[in-house]
Image 1 (spheres, rainbow, N blue to C red):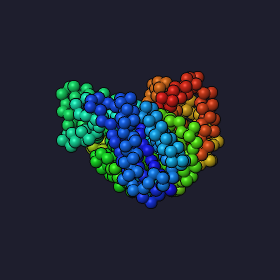
Image 2 (image 1 turned 180 degrees about the horizontal axis):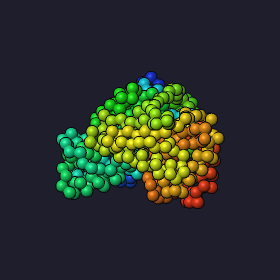
Image 3 (image 1 turned 90 degrees about the vertical axis):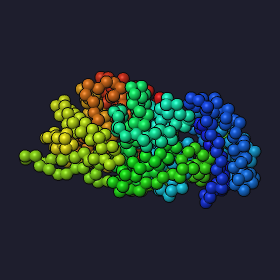
Image 4 (image 1 turned 60 degrees about the vertical axis):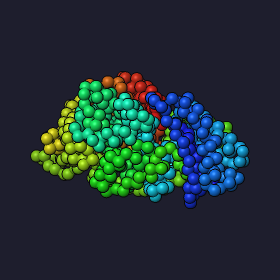
Length: 528
């Protein structure tokens, strides 16, 4: 099957000709504003003026006549609506002109599939980082699921904005990378990680303030990359252990950054898994990635009617079926993303000794600060939650200098390993979460792998990112993390979630208000 793949979600318009054995051509043209960021209307005008030439050039370069094309695939979303409309119109026109089927493709799905095709990765957990996207993606039960993402702006957008403030043109990521090579001093910046989610706007604001106070561009660029990239590698490591995947795939324009690749490589080596790097020519937006996803979609899901190819600027990858992936079966036992565990004995009690391990991918100064802070916070939260009657392990001792905590050993299994056996715990879990929030506590990393199921019911563990005197917004983020973990890991997650939230609202008078805010946060997710 010969496929014409057409990409045009933002600043780049691209077209490619390929089949399952070979990519015959891939032509792109990129809009580069003379100043400022990307204006959606200007990008659409650029697409309008270039898309016909790009398609014709790709067909000519391929050496395959247009009459031999069997399928047209195009990027249906997410993206900038004006650009998406131009792309969709061109794809429909080609489909009708050639008399061949058409499929609308999710843009991130294209990045995943071209990465799998070109590297040989089978069932990886993928870090997809670009201007408008920062996501951790893995396959579960016929769909790619989002295990973590940015809560505000994409890493690429943050780097572009920072470079623009310094006077560098779009795209600004390469300029920041070049400056960082000359930086030496690690400056203090926010380190914003919530479970497997990240946030970058605070880093940008703090970096601007540092520049205004006289810090050098080189040291600011160095510090921004050290903080932002370490955050992403940490969340990737957490996703690796949470999902049990046996490999890592990097994709998206920011994945070309050498510093980020080096950090990922260090983490992967320590975890004992391979890293697959999408080739540079396919990291950036291109038609080949849309064509590859189109091939698979056509083979396993069939074509679409023209009327079903309406663009969707918020089209998420977890809405696009992907039944062709054969998942690996793997679980990391007795290991965690941040800590090592060992059996202990505290007087007459069986205990668990938890040590937060140094991370070689982080700057040593930053690494110790994070490990020390989380050790101290976990000890404080365990003691406070236990006092409030929330089921947690009893704290025996803590030493933030050596980053060690000793606590009660809870006999049980984490929820992410229980499969369908976990369904009966939904109401009990909702009651515990409601009680925790009613006491003004937030867990901060509320995922299935941080909940133990013991003979007495659910027990919360590792509240090292928790908050005391939490507000409604922190509680809403708590629920959102829990919801994402449930939907990404459970085959019948919606049923579990409904039961849990019903129990949560019964226990917590403000539960409905928190849930409504959670839904608002979910609805305004910008990066799809």
